[in-house]
Length: 193
Image (tube, rainbow, N blue to C red; front, side, top):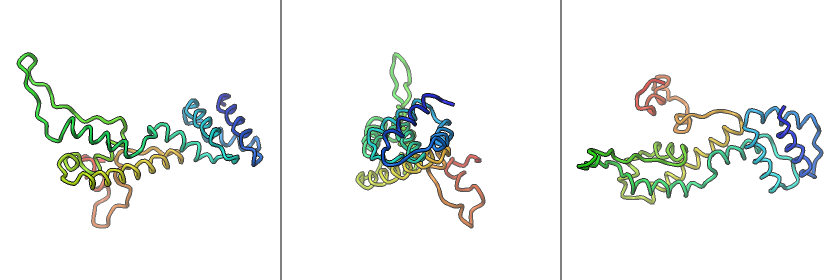
């Protein structure tokens, strides 16, 4: 049993003045939150106490707050600005540079601060983003993809599931005319699942 987490849960019950919380309830919360990092959970509980409306939050709310913190908690528009910076820095087809003193230096690779941004870029396609003559449409598609993936990540964190990049890119059923797993193989560039 994590004493620090239990202390924070007791502190949360004191902040929730509109309802009575039984010790058994605290034990259930404790048991369902022990798989997360105690420091992250305590920080999330502190934020929930600061914004508390007097009601005790659900386990999923606490897990969602931890997930938002772990995902960087930034907006899709900020991620889009990062994508445009990388488009200007890297481009879609930048060749390696030759220098007489060093030889060939490799072309720069795109890097993002969040794997969620990388997955949203992959869902649209890097070359499509770089070469589009309608950046406002690409931007809107990116924001929609990023928001959907972020919501799915938060929901997965609330329920304790782990998502892979393939789960982020496609969340639908296999089509009747496709062999089982074809969609996953297509998203992984033909590699077997």
